[in-house]
Image 1 (cartoon, rainbow, N blue to C red):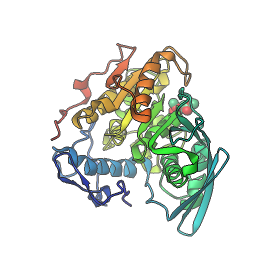
Image 2 (image 1 turned 45 degrees about the horizontal axis):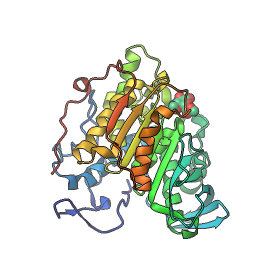
Image 3 (image 1 turned 60 degrees about the vertical axis):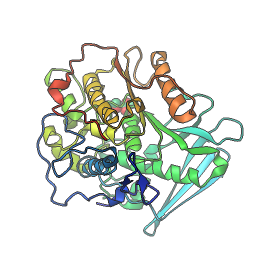
Length: 394
Ligand code: MCU
């Protein structure tokens, strides 16, 4: 499996002045890796050798290890950076051409930027934003379906990503879209006339596109703020918790159902659909790939299918990763039921504004450390699902 180049420089200096390895210097997952069954939410700090990380500097390779597990068993392989990306701006349209291994594809995004010289922070919105984006932040509309189709299970291997890498590429649609976001950032970096500050980029999407936004934040390290909205199962829900809700009689989307609906997950995930405890990771760890960068997860208790307990419990557990890294204020979870699916509710505006102000605009001081739900009867208990402690990483 190709390792991703996560960092630009060869080495970075860590918290205590130690040298942090670049992610492509982390160990590759052994080809004969075989997952062990675990009915609880797996320990995100547990390394392949059975010991736990003890230092913040070790997160780079632990994150890389979790990313490799997620690629192998759930999302497919994330390609190494392509040979070339070129971009041209015409009005508000940024056209992007990607070349790799003798092939090329082109796609475009539309940019709505504030007036003035910039550069401005921006939010990349899958399909269009269903959160309110303030007028001093640009919006970049990404037609993710153009990169990886998501009509139904017949969409596997269709879209521009697969035109470039082949219809047999293992990457699922969600990973193909994340790759598209990576290329948008490449293009923005090369196009100062677009007036976008690539150090202040967010990504959002709702529902199926919310699942995708979370995956983009997990895989694209140049995204500063990840804002998945009502992503539910396949996004902010943990598979183990969705299965538990189903056992309790709630009509939620589970792994066994989702693989019959669409191509958001890889073919290799299908072997786990009816034996979720064998999956060596769960979505608290997918979310954890965003850490220590900023993540605000927005959910909706009025939508049973999303798995209200599954998203709350999963993200409450994910928050422990930011706690261990000493940046609990870089991750928030908000869940209210006073609105229909993907319709914005002002009850979540203060939380969204706190994150955008702090992590994109750079002026915010409001609290961003919260895990909140308006339903106190969800029935999630740490004791039932988390058999590990939160380490204090040195
Ligand atoms: C919440 O996201 C999905 C859900 O996973 C699907 O089962 C359902 O068909 O569609 C939702 C969605 O994307 O709604 C727009």
